[in-house]
Image (cartoon, rainbow, N blue to C red; front, side, top):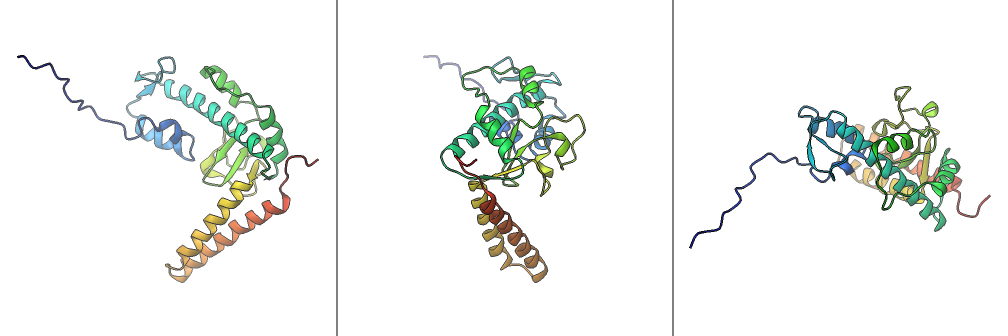
Length: 225
């Protein structure tokens, strides 16, 4: 009996980020990570071919990142609206603007989003909400008010260079709780470091607790004028 043919093992190099790069792109500094991984090979995704790897177009990955960013910001706005209507408090200089946008944002479930539309969607100044889990806040991005030193024609914030005190800032009760958790972690770390480092860790913990307290004192909830 003849043995059935076997498919030879795939020995091609695998990208360690395969299947995870849209998530990575949304994180602070994520575009840098992707640029390092894909930049030299110029391996990109063709947005018209169901996400398959294979094209060599320089624009391809940028188109898909625009689409993923638009989808992500729409999800962020929808999540904020849901949390607010369910009783979660919101604070920050841009809180009311963010809540207005979140209540009117278009949802894309079941919709095919093209790159041109995604770019137009992201170019709407002060109407797009970005999640910044590293800084524990949302950014209701307005170019003229941003402190993150973006080029004048940029339509997106530099989430890895978020500056405290920026008037684009929005925080929720969830962010305030996470600030307190992070502060407690820093206090525990301080116990295992020499005094100069421990003092800096404790100072950062105090600053985070101050941000959480400011949120508690200024938060607005559903139904308030």
